[in-house]
Length: 205
Image (cartoon, helix red, strand yellow):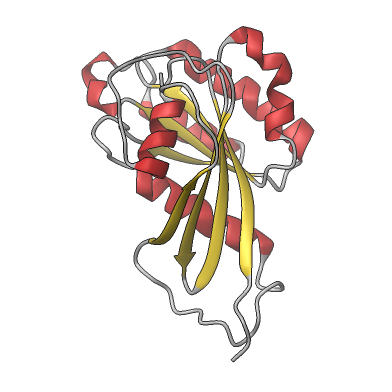
């Protein structure tokens, strides 16, 4: 039987400081969450290996610093990305406005084929919401993205986010790079086969 090919995708998390990018990053890659809100001072990198619909996939996930002073170097990290997760805090309207700026920058730097997800984090603080859900969903549709809500703290919506993103990454590439004999039967969830930390990082905000 022919060997199955392994697909590799670079995915970057972007957003303002303290929206919870690192919490999402660590929750998905290590199933960890910390109440401590240290500022991310440099980009961190993890590889998540999984099998989806019979295809082996490696997601190379980059977590970036969100503070204004780091914006100038952000292109270093999202260049050549195939997917991007743009995170905002549902209790902070300004963080959602900044997502719109990131979208324009990503489209300019990475092109229209970039697979986008816009994520409203901290749904555990719903009563403090300052971003209207319908407005966020409508905006995502306008820019060709999909919108998600999640709570890294409660571990809600994280797996669904990455599962959908991975499926769309595969779909955007098409089937041309797969051997025709590779299994294509859909599977209901991710089958995690490995999770390799690549470098040390500061704790999440």
